[in-house]
Image (tube, rainbow, N blue to C red; front, side, top):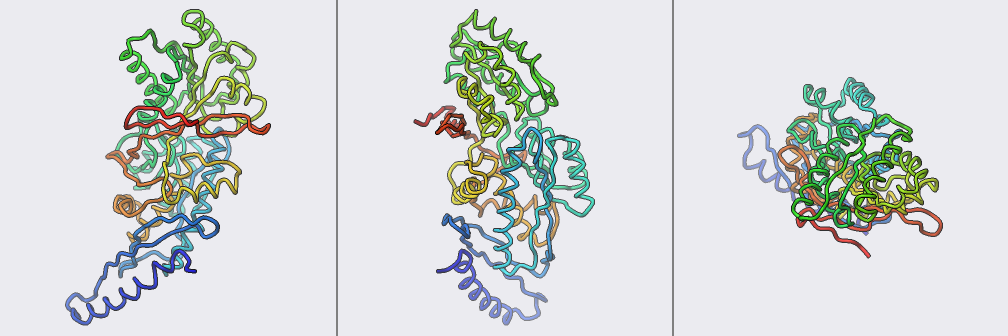
Length: 451
């Protein structure tokens, strides 16, 4: 039984060798040297238990090929802090991708290996920049990072000034939708804002009270969601709208004051419009667990529905029994960009289920594809040059179909995608679990609920 790479190497390389000899004999010394471009279709599958395939077209080495030894890529992840759940998944899939990529390079006779150098940022923008600067000082020019939009924003000017390429699987702030050295394999929040607004409307929300994290990401998503909800409301002709909300300090750890304010707003709104028409929009990271912990002291807050976002989708703290019962009771739903079905999606699912015992979030699929497309771009360029890698990525995308489907970035380097999974928690066999309960389709601005 052939391994995944054998069918891609035996015949094409033999034929290519004959072609090179014939051409060289005819041309002789006219060109000094002959460069032969060979397109090889490689079928990549998981080495162990999964037999999904994906077609990529790698570039073969040319006389100017300069890569050798260990080629390092910086990886800046929140392994601690408010997005530690995200960091654990992304680290797991990057380590797996590194093994896959290096097997691929070895089989194809490349003289180099990829090494992902992982650092913890604790979701702190300044720490993120400091770690990036330290790795850049060692010669690293290409990064997977900017997991939060605040982190990416802090690092942008430094990256732009030095030609450092940074690719994010999860930064979504609309404020960062500009042409620069940052690429985002995830759609910006003007799309997610539309998704959340439509989902809330479908759930019966007519008056929303927003509570959000006061940073680049939270402000941008709150604004996008509120503006879209107002537009839906206006077009409906119904009595509806957006009420006063609460913007909180992203460094806050305890929320008794904010939740006390929230219950006052909810009480007033419920008296005016009724419990079935009032809903809470919570835009946060893992501190959402502390918000729910404080909210449990007020029975009224368990009597209205809540809505979340990608910052709270599939996160571990909301499965803690101390808050999970309330999370389930208020039907707290969270959105996350959907990778859709793709040839290597099952590989990512299999790895995360085996290593972490849960289904992966959308950003994990995007991260896997970032790792692979960086490697393929480096191989095509033939040297360690961040700007050249960025410029050749559109060509790599034409041939690559990975874990998140076809990749297409807009003029700002953001993914042009508008599908969002809808995540919810439920108690199953005495354990609380996350699962996908629906899908938002941005092309039709509609919601499909799964039975």
